[in-house]
Image 1 (spheres, rainbow, N blue to C red):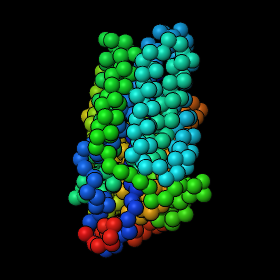
Image 2: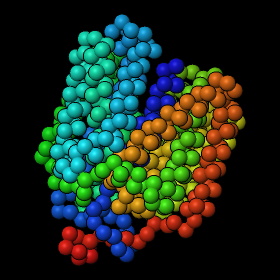
Image 3: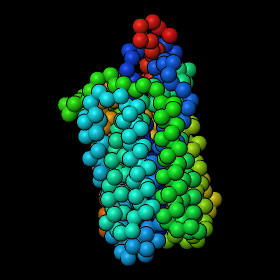
Image 4: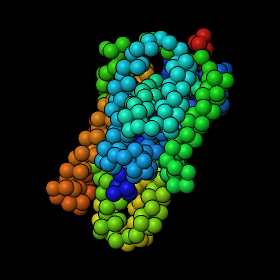
Length: 436
């Protein structure tokens, strides 16, 4: 059960990344040979690394309960099922905060918004570490949800302005999302390991300390991040109004549903059908995470060249995995190859989605992202529920073969609805309108 829960939530971590890291740009765009963030003397490696480390701390905070749920339930005298609310509540609050917070802060300098949200994360983790009742623990997780929703909907969209002027936007995106990937591969497992020796509270205390360090980095190194204009309720569907963005969202939806529906099938398959022991399963899941790091790096390079073909490659990888898993993954070698390919494909997926939105709808990203965050969280829940329903009422093989239809629809969309949508050749002008 712990393996199933861990992988289902880890899949939420990585999936949420591609809306968490959508890129915001203020300046106009004209012909050039490469895609780069807005030139700004204020952007720096320190600034973008501060955001990446904040993403690491936030994702670790959000999903750390996965590994300590039994300990929390025992310590606070509640059932494991009830204790699971500490995983659910932050997402519920995040779905509410994502569209509402950017509208509420209007034209406030996003530097102060980011600092405030990081401080909220530190406060929430400190409350969790010292909570003596389950009710206080739930309150602390609700507070964390404000930081999660606001951070992903507001702060990460500024990656292009935080990066050094010479850094391509695809690489800036990959750097920020590396914080999410490393949290998945290292943060949550290390936090779980620490809790085994020092108690579950220590893991949250250490995460709060990391957040405090990030807060200091932001105070010293974040540049001024004034928005182009205030976001209003009517602005939230901005991405939906852009045809190229709608095509990308449909492709993202199909591939995302395929993954979310099928992912809970992975650990049960290894245990119940392949007959692998716990150590082997854990090793395969770690392999998945490591492969995701390489997928993220690949997409940062390939997506900068042609994001549509990158998506096509990702779709083919998923198709191979879903076709081959019931047949070949019952043997260790086949399981290793297909699990690594699955991890690689999903590691590349978020970055590619980010790049698609930036290159095809750059001026709609800032205002459309908050609603996209909320919509995507609903999509995650829908995929998980649909996958669980199929497994409960039919079997794993029907599920794994059934999601191939989603991948097929995504590939058809890439070569029909998105036909000819190659990366535009663009350049950015400085604030005086002089081409760089």
